[in-house]
Image (tube, rainbow, N blue to C red; front, side, top):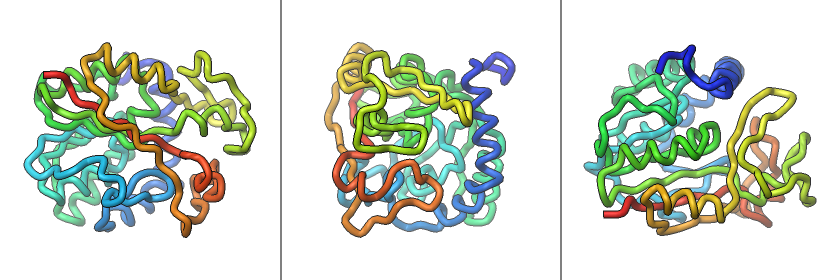
Amino acid sequence: MSSSDRPDYVQQNVANWTRANTEYTDASATRAWAQEEITWGVFGKPEVELNALGDVSGLDVVELGCGTAYFSAWLARRGARVVGVDPTPAQLETARRLQRETGIEFPLVEAIGEDVPLPDASSDLVLSEYGASLWADPYRWVPEAARLLRQGGRLVFLTNSTLSVVCMAMDGVGELLVRPQFQLHHKEWPDTHEVEFHLGHGDWIDLLRTTGFDIERLVEVFASPEAETHTFYKYVTADWARKWPVEEIWVARKRV
């Protein structure tokens, strides 16, 4: 799919992530690539605590919406054969720079999570950490993930918790419900024109099951007692995230 044929929301999000890459993401990517530990989400919850991935050594992995590909780099360092997929050229260029600097190399593909130019049944694990899981239409990217996976392969993705989304006002996540959960699917933020996609738990379950997945885990991610509010992602405070789940990790397996 050419850039001009992409949905309007993709073009809006690519424009925003191009700006973000200049303002913040390029510098933060260097720190992330240097990080030894795998962590999840805004507050960096360690994988060793959550155990959402397990052993990835020797697995064929596709990361949908890899951004600057730090998560892909973490997996490649652990012996996975990774392909990073993202629609934003600026972020992929940052990833290529860090590949040259670190010597950690793997393919990077410019594409959207809803239409990936990779073969059917070519991966053991499809991953998204605030990538396609947030910025792509789930009714398109989840079937695409199923297509990419071999039978018995796993889909693991992290996104905002349903609770945080229904409590998310223009100035951040609060302690009041500010939007209905009904028809939560498509959300455009008026200040940035970023487009996000969210589903309630029932809709996620229905989508995953009808797409051929069995759900193995739903991991609710809280901030640790020592966590501090992020200096860039200020939309949710560490205090809020210690009391309620800020994110969710879904683990599903493609039916044999």
